[in-house]
Amino acid sequence: MPIPDPLSLWHDLEATVRHTLTHNELAQGGLLIAALSALAVQARTLPATALNHLKGRFTITLDVQGDDAAFPWLAAWLAAQPVGRHLRHLGVVTRFNEQMGGQNLTLGVDRDGDDVNVRLVPLSGQVLLRYRGHWVLARPARTQRQIAGSSAAGFNHSLTFRMLASARPIIGELLRDAYDSTAGRSDGRVEIHVPEYQGWTLAERRPARPLSSLIYAETLLDTLSGDLNAFFRDRDWYAQMGIPYRRGYLLHGPPGNGKSSLVAALAGQFGLNVCVLNLATPDLTDDRLTGLLSTLPRRALLLLEDIDAVFLGREPRAPTVKLSFNGLLNALDGVAAGEGRVTFMTTNDPGGLDAALIRPGRADRHVHLGNATPEQIAGMLRRFWPDWTEAQVRDLAQRVPGGLLSMARVQEYLLERRADEAGVTHDWATLTGTGCPTRLRLLPAG
Ligand SMILES: Nc1ncnc2c1ncn2[C@@H]1O[C@H](COP(=O)(O)OP(=O)(O)OP(=O)(O)O)[C@@H](O)[C@H]1O
Image (cartoon, rainbow, N blue to C red; front, side, top):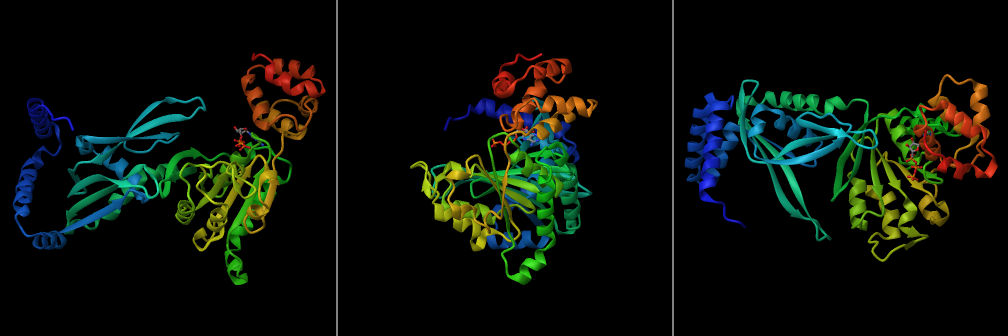
């Protein structure tokens, strides 16, 4: 470890103390801080039991662990407090489309049109702050931990708030304030969680996509949301019948036809979040998968993406795969599998899947989402140009043979030409039969 230059260290320290005493709104509290520091020094000479007794008698400690849902709210809240600026060991949390509290900095808009925000969160240190007439000592901390079965190391984060026993009533207010100023703003958004070590971490909070913005075969959306509705409504019935209260769906079809979008939109409609897990995640062992399925966040749909990527039948596709096929089945329907869990599995190639993985009970409904039909293309054209007449829409849509293009491809083509209705009409008027996909792909924009 490099040895710090004592002179620069001294200047740094001196500047910090001077700044704290002159700019800090707690300057008046300087005496108190000094008194507390002196007390703390004295306290070190007391036997540990006596010290703990004193602490327990006169103070309250609120401990929040990093894997608790309240942790991000409280960390953001602390960073947003004026004294939070004096915490000198910070970390960066990056979020898309999320305006959380704390010292948010909007970096710009990425290629998907999402706002990219970074937020500074305190990692260690301590500050004394005044909250609702009480002194609160806030102490963020992180400790390194080894991850079982992996050479990688992770960190445990925690936040501790210590206050005098008389301050107990402000704890609820503090939690509510932190929630209101951060998580409370996310109403109507869908949270996307991804695996992190043994648990899940929030990766993104995005506006819920309306189901009406997705265009599938006529009855598909109604059937699926009706099925989910019945599942959530009939919890007691499942219990009476002794049937495990779980529901599984297999969404299959070529890429880009709305499998992932459908899960996110259904989550938005039912006020749920999504936990996305790719079975090809490195280091995914049987134990880790079981752990992940038993610690799913509340009110979350589980999305197992590309389930064909890891096993061909029951055999691992690569020697690096640590998950076993039986481990996957056990995790899906073992005791720890989670009551009330709704699982969506997606695949482009259902042919390569073992029947056991997608049998009823694990995947109760199989839904094929194929390439765009003329009706779906018509639906997409109506969304782009709501003023077009029905005859105009139908005339163009039936020129593209059904089943050749993915909906993502059609969407991209129309997006590029959204300001050029005449160009689209002209291009499509000359489309013929099977030449269509290449032609759509190669036509120059504009
Ligand atoms: N049926 C649809 N209606 C409207 N838009 C769609 C539809 N299908 C796909 N899209 C659009 O195409 C893009 C890709 O869709 P999505 O990622 O959901 O497809 P996917 O089937 O999950 O693909 P993959 O198998 O590659 O993961 C999205 O931006 C979505 O808006």
